[in-house]
Image (cartoon, rainbow, N blue to C red; front, side, top):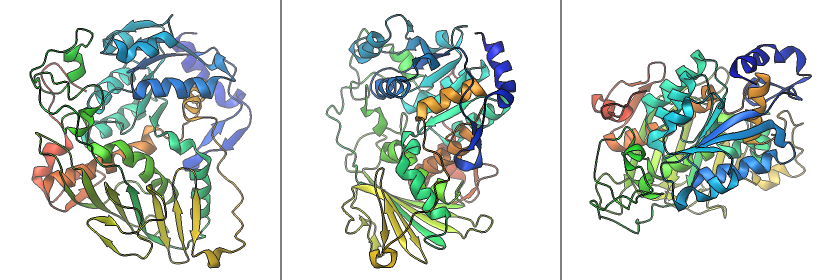
Length: 447
């Protein structure tokens, strides 16, 4: 099946795919999907998180292996870092250069699991080439990149999915149903926390080391300014330097802030303030502990919301008292979300939920489910490519979430409260924020 035929199926599937069911975010997903040839998939970034995606993809499709065919693999490190992925798909074409993937006729869709700073350039190139895109969170490295990908996906009618895998979990869906049923009343306050704290990298320094012979360091840098190789960066600690990642906030907040964004129909905040602490003095190092306070405007019949994110601290303070050091006291959760409504509270993590105060909810009957359980985060995307249907974490939904997360880091780096215009993507009260909203690319790299 070539791409033109796939597009034809996409335009006609709604009439032949069968019954439609209500998906999340008020969209419809055709089910069962059209019986078509496998989606020809390339995976870009196959070590670390990339191999975890491979594992999840195989698990989700094991009962229906005909839905996908992995035709190509890419990783800038051709050594042991990528060996498991190559062994999993020994017949797939392999290269260290993503541009050779984008140009292939036997690739209809790409899964991107590279470090954050190369997400956008790869995703943009793929979308422009007519490929469908699954991209790991936090979607892109800065606000400008996120907004560019949202726009490109819309203009090219691309089937997209951000890798916020917990969005497919049943517990999140039940929480959304409870919140949207009005069980907690009006919700104006949400607290989100993740106890992870930046750990001191095992190798600080060694900035002039020689890159391994298996690593294409120039391609690993991608759009980031040239700098001497350091064994500190690859394969994981890149996340703790501003040029490559955004620390714990960029790593984890898309997973946890997804729940209130979904349940309360939040999109972009109107103001952001952040404060944090860097425990390790190193060039361009991210904060080990961080608190970000976001304010969201009222939405239709929903009131304004104040959402606080904390990482590197304790759990949720159920008494309502909070300090910079984090939410004091815990509900035995090292990470989670606390909704505070005028009729009650709900605390949840990936797999559990609890209504409070418990005596008020004795005998509580959950609302009738309205959000179908997921077929799997990856499989949902593949299914949508076949049918032309939507996905639950398409860039139109997940983009504003990723943008909000990145704005927390912008506020921290500016060191002042920010007023944000979501329509234009501009900070209106702090000209210095512009340098953090849009990163400079080195010569030869563009979106």
